[in-house]
Image 1 (cartoon, rainbow, N blue to C red):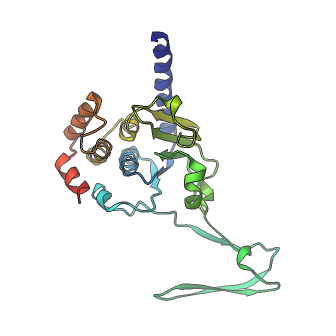
Image 2: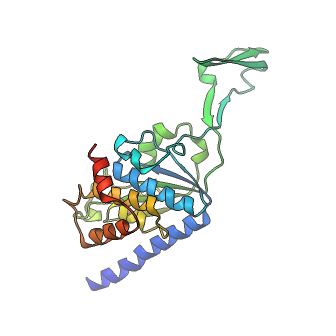
Image 3: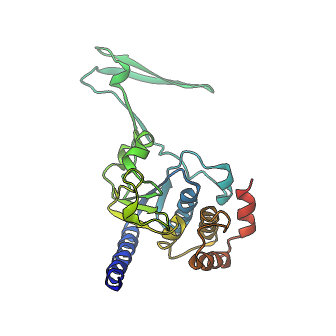
Length: 258
């Protein structure tokens, strides 16, 4: 038993070191959390931490739950990319003129064809952005399955390295998790531990400010159901440290109970 523990500890430390190095080397980072509220809270926290380090960070979140909007004074940074492309193959037809009409109700784009005809299936739509140096997924089990609909237009995300952050139930042996619910380990680095997502993400955040502390503590309140379940000594110790950083537990619990 002792020999097994000695073998596992360096591997866990090595994964953290690799993750920290990947974060340090990346300048353009895209964070994609699952729809789980703890994962979203951790994504907010990591956003604040990386922004303070001078990183160019974007969050892809379809909808922020009302109870979590207090974590940010502005949600302007949570948006899909802004450069949108409409593509029509020249082998289908030549277009001689393009103009548009814009009013309060709609934007209409008019095309004059040189020859041939266009069908709906001939036109493709996608976002065109700078390819990120790193994609961080938080709480996502199967990247291709869970994000297919969300990433259909995000071709610029393809082939970027992924840091896959996820947690497993502390009471379940990782090897005993059913394949259909297990993390598919799709990342370049798979940081998967028997801890809360908040704790795992926090282990990568060296400079925690008041905003990130509030987000991490929010995630812990969600994970423990306001410190009623999944309690460990480490969680209490970490929660205390976050409150010393400026996280207001009373504000967090009040906002989550709305």
